[in-house]
Image (cartoon, rainbow, N blue to C red; front, top):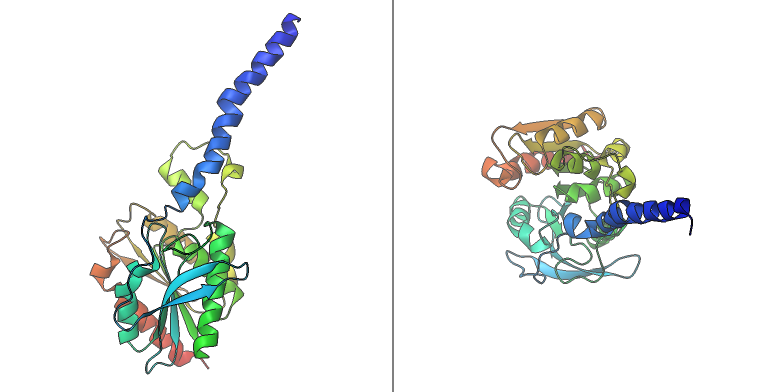
Amino acid sequence: MTLSRKIALWLCALIMLFGVIPFTGIYFAQGAFVFPVPDRGAGEAAGGFAPVTITTADGERLNAFYHPPGDKAASILVFHGNAETAANQMTRGQALATAGYGVLLAEYRGYGGSTGEPSEAGVITDGLASYDFLVAETEGPVGIFAHSLGTGAAIPVAAARDPFAVVLESPFTSLLAIARYRVRLMPPFDFLLRYPFRNEARIGEVRAPILIIHGTEDKVIPFEEGEKLATLAPKGTAFIKIEGAGHNNLGQYDDIKMATSFFTKALAANP
């Protein structure tokens, strides 16, 4: 074997060792970081909610929770964050139900004992199935309430369907932006991101009134992300800045009252 051939083989080996193999590992390991599924089942229904099973267009079965509408004759579809399940939204759901709304606490494939494995396309498909379930169940207007990663499902669903209003808590422009926030010196390997969740590219397609709520001390999704997304949203989008609030404690700042007030005003203006 010639020296030049040996050098070429060594270079190929080094590229595989320090380039292809690590990046391949990063690519396929992302599911565990983006979708850290809690190790628990569907959880218990409470406060007038009942467990329901929703079948998606591609045959997955989702374990969600449903509360029929009260005097508002409208319903709210609730999308949870990445390390939660639908049952974790029970308190929020009860507050919406007390305000007179029907509520569906949506679940994603692979979460809460539901079938399948989560992915970006998958949770969007799940969101569409959940929205259509509410429309068929109530035949009334449907609003959308989403937190954190749930906004990545909510925005495409809102763009594809016709909700009367959308509330986004602690949203992001894209998961690439969050990756860059967490890894300051991240190289420009955008193609390695399996689940980009490009909210900034889709929010302009939403036709419904939008409210964005974000805490200034959010260390998971920085406040600037929600602020920037608001500038990219359709004209008239409302933005509430909550001083001192973090990522998971918005309930301490009466976020539900803000959301309910917004839904009620949007519903009154809905023809």
